[in-house]
Image 1 (tube, each protein chain N blue to C red):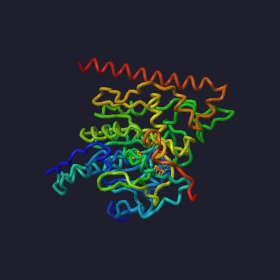
Image 2: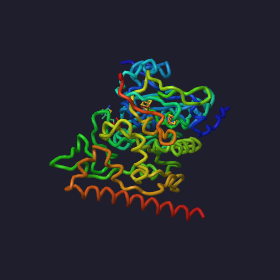
Image 3: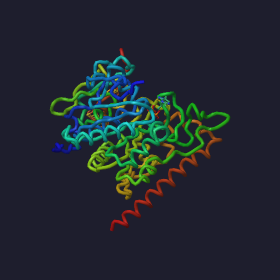
Image 4: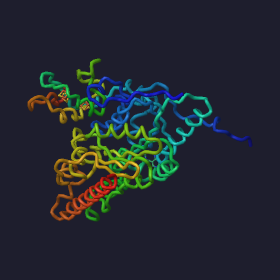
Length: 98
Length: 321
Ligand SMILES: Cc1ncc(C[n+]2csc(CCOP(=O)(O)OP(=O)(O)O)c2C)c(N)n1
Ligand code: SF4
Ligand code: SF4
């Protein structure tokens, strides 16, 4: 029997395109939809830091922009963590499709 | 020649301008804590990172065939060998640099694993990699059970929790044992850095990651990672619960650097443990009148652990004088 070296072993799955999951939209999972109320936003960026789905867009200047509804799963973490302005939340959750 | 890497400024406004190295489109459940942990770890530094991942929720949901959420080189081989895998990658890198086949780009090596893959099944490979002294960091995202296969108990599952392999019912009232204190066990390996962190305290977490990457040798970071499916909680409370874990001293934030212990965040007021337990369905039965002893026992355990930490910290403060 000929000797086998590691080079001859099958490679397994190799994905060469970094971050290709962006092609898979997860927004359809959402049953609740976060809504951004800009006038109550103090630009603290907590929502951005805590979003598990990287679904809060940021401008080139590092400011909070709209939600990325292509990926947002509607978990509501951003709304719960948002301090808002003078007790008024800058994010509220609404039922999807309403 | 070694490439120099600029340190990262840990200010939210500055961080937000950066590019994510763990991106959307992954298939973790809505509101899962693990992707928050991963994004914070990767965000803390400008160093190039190569990571391995133990089998588990994070691994199966972040790389599905051609869809990967990672923007760094990433390897998965099995459940029990994330630490061994990355230690091999690190050894190969070092060898190639030494042979002059590769420029040293100051790459950092990280292994990610769930608590099952870390406290239990991957424990010997982790212990071995730490003992061999590889220049790597192991990050455990601790959600307190084998979540990916349906919430089985692990040695990280807290006392009293209801899981599918220690179901609260007539025979037993949930898990009867206390959790294994893995962070202390890793510190007892004599490694230069072991710490506990929480995604709620992102700055503390990122400072620990930055510090760890400046230290040569093996590092261990244990991060609490809420799982609303397994914890039977709501999809929006991953950060709120990890914060309560810190504020009740259930999950103290501390670091052990060359043996010396320091508590990095002390709660202003230590909250009763029930504030952490109550919102979670996995502890629901503990609030039944006949199980009052369980709440008492759980609180006593947390108190004793916290007292112990404070004493140890006081010892090291005194020793450093
Ligand atoms: C050797 C081996 N045993 C069992 C499994 C099945 N398995 C896959 S994921 C998993 C649970 C992982 O639990 P944990 O490490 O806590 O991570 P989590 O899923 O909770 O994030 C199990 C048991 C496996 N893949 N390999
Ligand atoms: S609802 Fe959840 S997924 Fe959507 S933007 Fe808020 S934190 Fe992110
Ligand atoms: S958490 Fe609220 S106030 Fe802060 S940036 Fe986000 S929307 Fe604005």
